[in-house]
Each structure stands twice: as C-alpha cells, then as structure tokens.
Length: 253
Image (cartoon, rainbow, N blue to C red; front, side):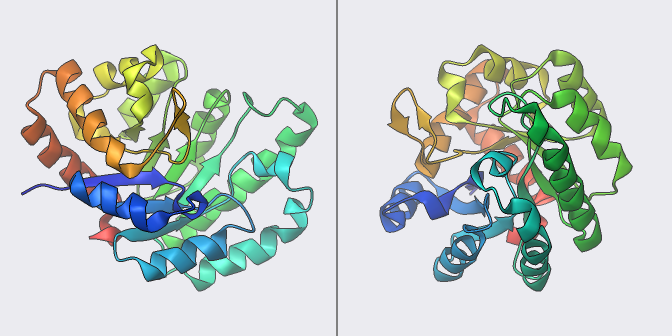
C-alpha cells in the first residue's frame, strides 16, 4: 500500500494543526515535511515536529525574510548554529532560495544572495537535500546550484521559463506540485514536461488556492490531476511518487 507525502508545508502557521493532520490522514497522507521560513519560526517548526509523528522538520530562511525582518543579517550566524545543533532531526534545508518577483527592492538582492549561499553551504556540510524557492530569479538560482555538492534538490512550485525547467530536468532535480495545478498553466506545464520519476507532491499550506486555505489533505487531488495529465493510473503514480520521495528525503522514512 503506497502512501502520500507532502514534501513542503508550513505547518507552524496553522492554528489547528490537529485538525490538519487528521484530515491529511483520511486522505492517506502519512508524512508531512514542515518547512521553516523565518528566524522566529524555526523553534516552532522543531517543537511541533517533536509533538507529531507525522511531521518532519526542514529548516531554512525564506528569501522574503530580507523584506520582513530588518535584523536578519545579524541573526544569520545564530540561525545557522540552531540548524547545526538540530542536524540529526532535520530532513532538509528549506525553504530557501531567491525571489525577484514578490521582492521588488533590488537593494535587498545582495543580502538574499548572501543568505542563499550560506544555506547552500550548510546543506552541503550537513549532507542534506534542499527545498527551493526560485520565483523570478530562476536563472540566478540555477547558475548558483552547480557550485555546491548537495545530495538532492527539490524545486518547489516552479512556474518559471522552460529553459531553466529543462536545465533542472537534465540535472536530475525534483519538482513538487501544488494544488495550483487546478488552474495554473505554468504548473500544468511542469507536470507535462517533467518525467513522473522526478515529481513530488506538496500543499505549501496554508497558502490559499482560489480563496481556499491549502492543506496536506489536498495533495490527493493533486495526485489525481497529475494522473490525468500524465495518463498514468493514480495507484501506479502514487507508488512512483512515494519512491521518488524516499529517494530525495530518505531521512523521513
């Protein structure tokens, strides 16, 4: 019997995590990677991951932090120490990356790049995979990655140009698909181009999809929609995606 795994969810941001996990279980979602974003959220991610068997922590600094947290540069060393201290608990470094789409202030880009490079170096040192955000900065992200030796790379919610998508495919990266597959041509495009051996499932909850809060339970529908696009039976696809997830995020099994 295969299981579903949500590889990218901000579990620390839900108000009623018990309900979220219960609903997920009803849909066959057995494991959820809880990704960190901020200096203040990392301890909370660790705390709830300790309390629930279904949750597995990934720690990192989201590229939007340069905009949200004026003190992030000064906190960087202590954040890295927290992550190193918890090296045996985490399954990945994430959510990390660059964002030149939502973050418009170009003067913040050098700091974003600095943080991204520190996070990649950390993933290399700890020998763990990364969960990546690339919005509007795809070329820069893809140009940077070969400088590091990282066990595996997942690109979360990719919606950029095909040229970098194909580069990622050639390099063996994984791509996690969100409930935006219901209405987003770029997400459908990723599904049609990436082979099913490199697809993963994610909710990115509690991000909203058409006004509805995203939850791990939704990835069952994501699987079914991928199954339609790929013309692969849902059961076969579920087994394949579990296999893919075991390949990249082996620590959660």
